[in-house]
Image (cartoon, rainbow, N blue to C red; front, side, top):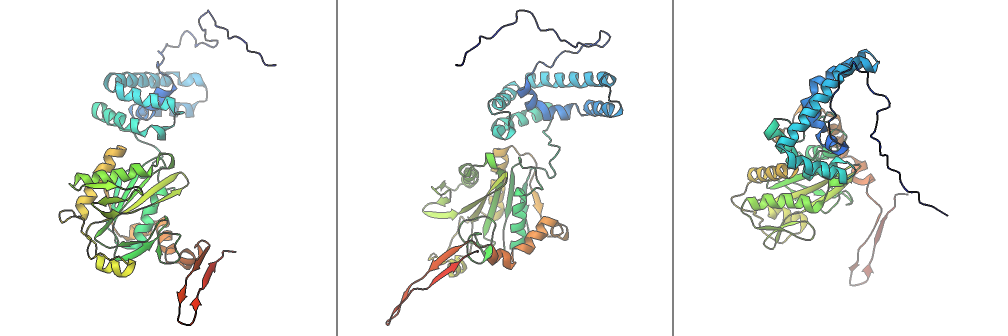
Length: 376
């Protein structure tokens, strides 16, 4: 039988059992719990960088804790000073962020929406930016000028590779020379790594790829980013139940998605002024033309998407243009991706199991062949 024991309350004030010696100067506590400290952590790292480095150097020189008390006091005073300034200049944004962290197991990725206004306020009022030490490449939109399908497809995969911080959003915009690109589960063709249907690419078709942490990824939200970009150009677009973007009764943008470890991404196409006479020969459409708008170009659409992406995810860095060069193709993961895409193993060997049946009736009989692909 279980019993409940009443809690006890101490009437005496807490006394530190191991107080500092009297000759050590006293330093006021920060007056903040773990959630506010975690919210401010990266800003403290930037604001108190010199004091932190002195403290770490001192600890490396002597393992005796008493040896670095002076340096430690400087770090504490600096952190307290910043906390005070954050309360004075960005109190509402600071409180919203740390309260979100407190309610979400102090996981940063769950509080990105509350974090962005805090980052903006800290930059505007105190000139401080959030810098993540492990981030190898700055979080920024990438605009690819290369028009080779294998290079673009390989580069679009980098947002889900280990070359980036998995918590940072990424946008890639690119175009390809005329080609047909199919989902990875199709039988044969120029396959991309995500699933979905078959799409036609040419220079009148602009492609976008939005990469996010897996836990933060929401395909409806990423579709809305692109929809806001379309509407900012004066086009009355909408998102249908499949998260495709439509203008009037026509679908002008289709999407595919993929999850890789702790990242997820949304690929999309935007038909701006593509050659549907060629597309019709390849994909069996009956329409003659597809003109998004005579006033909209690849550049104007790109600028609109970049702007909405930056606003949605709090990105302040300008877009980075990526060109076809020996430097880019010498990067190992891009070189490997370019070599893999035309290979037999990718085009055929990784095709999933399937059964395909057709039927044709002749005057003398009905023919019903069945094709099986078994991986065993």
